[in-house]
Image (tube, rainbow, N blue to C red; front, side, top):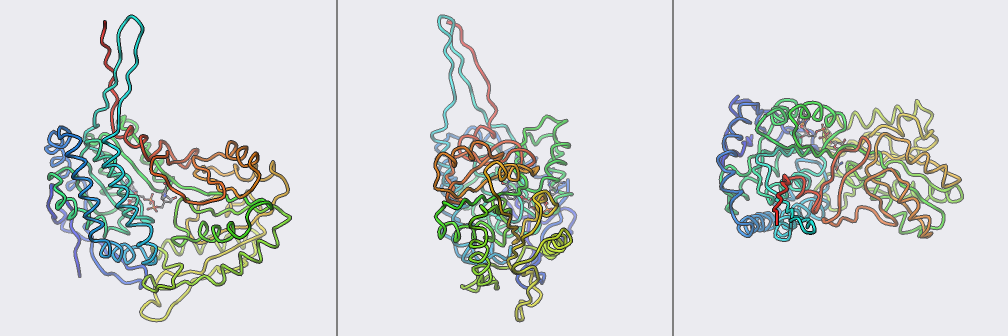
Length: 480
Ligand code: NDP
């Protein structure tokens, strides 16, 4: 059985404990590799390496750093197929999705920040007759990047790329459930000429090695994407050490559909926004609100399309949905379907686990699920499920739908379908979320601020926001 290793100080090494954890293949439910069960001793090694590397990396010219990051991006691109297959196998997502979204996006993340840093400028403030202030933006030092399993390399690189571009050394931990592409990244970084110790990748349990990263005094900032509960714990742990924190957390995103929208475009996009990546994207819309005059039309057309969705093993080119990421997660999602029934909901489609033919019969598959008849404030409509489950709710007025839209503790994104321009802008303004998509979904421009409000997080990623997060501003005043 293949044993993955930690990547510390430019070398692949075994965890100090010598212990390993099982890595399951979601498509078959079988263990297919082992990952290091790292702990605080491995973090200590990584910190020592990063401390040595920091003066080299932070003092390198921006052009040199940029070149290495461009090479890193090209290195992933050159091994596209290997990364795509690895991501799909580790996560259960269709190969086609990993090939169209996950890995190309990881390539873009490195390329984007490799070049963005060349244009990153700091501010100056002139004081008439007195002098001038200028702001230095220095790298922070050693930073921690912790990412989840749903878009493994995509979100891992979204953090690491700006952190490195800004001149920091990184100690990163992917989810223990999806470690493989992060494991491969070490090789590519080495080949790209990244100095030893600049990027260190540790594997293992969140509560163990992740916790040790958060608690380490020399790690000055933490960029975290994951669940709200974990984010809350991280904030409580890191705040007394005054660490900089960027927290991208859960969501319970609304999709608002008005009768005046382009019905066909809305319908096909809503299938994607509901079930892409098995519904395991923080940006998926799980609460669908439909203007009552088109409720029945939408329901019939949507359910018909959902029933035709092909759930299959990841390598099947026809698969629109693959396996969920793990057995505990599948069980959690299915438990919400039971809860929805108890809360008075009617399952219009799906709701059950799927057993494919061998060798995929123990894989973690379920049908895309559509539920109606629930109140907007029940648990099913308030708690994050993070799987292929959506609810349908009719509405009569803008006022009524906005009350329901803004009723959850979350505020990551809002999707809106209408041809009424005035209404679109009004709702975009009123929606309590960090991101709004009008007549579209998941159109991403890497320059824009990315993140949520309320329990969906603190801080923003993307573009200058990320480079500002990973630098410490220092103001200098010069008297005339
Ligand atoms: P978790 O919060 O369980 O884990 C996220 C990461 O944190 C994993 O690497 C995990 O390691 C690690 N971790 C867990 N506990 C600790 C700890 N005590 N200290 C340090 N690190 C820890 O989230 P999931 O992996 O289950 O991801 C799903 C969640 O991520 C959903 O809530 C989803 O909404 C959110 N998400 C948010 C996005 C956004 O941009 N706002 C984007 C994508 C997902 P391990 O895997 O080993 O437990």
